[in-house]
Amino acid sequence: MAAQELDGIAADLAARLGLSRPAGRCFAAIWRAAQAPSAEALVAELGLSRSNVSTALKELRGWGLVSVERVPGDRREYFTAPPDPWDILRIVMAERARRDLAPFADRLRNVDGEAAADLAKMLGAVAGWMEGLSRLQASDLAQAIAGEPAEGGKKKKKKKKAR
Image (cartoon, rainbow, N blue to C red; front, side):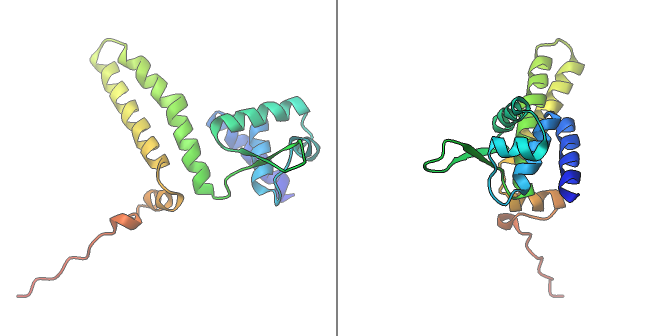
C-alpha cells in the first residue's frame, strides 16, 4: 500500500510542479525501485498505457529527473533517478526558474512602465536565487534551506575581550 500511496502523492506533487500526473507516478516508481526499471516494467507496474509511459519518460528526461542506463546485450533502456531528495529539489528548482520565472521576467522587461520593470526585476532576482540554490551540492542546499551555514562558510566564534 505504501508504494501506491507514494505514487499518488508523487502524481499530485508533479501536477503542482508543472509535470503530468503519469510523469509523477513513473518518477515515484523509478525513484523507489531497487533495480532500474524499463518502460515495459513501468507499464506493467503502474497499469498505464505504453504511450503514457513513453510520454512521461520523455517529460522526466527533459526535466533532467531521470537518466537512461543500458545493459550490454539488452536493447531495452532502464531508467534511474537521483536517490537523494535534495538532488531532486535542486533539479526541480532549476527547471522551474528556467521554464516559468525567467520567461515571465523577459516578457515583463518588454512592457513599458515602472510597475512592470519592478516586477521583472523581482522575478529575475527570484529566478537567479533559485538557480543559485540549484547549483549547490545537495548537502549544502539542505543546510541553506535549514538556515545553517555551508561547510565553506562556517561562522567564526567571537573572542571575548579581556577587561
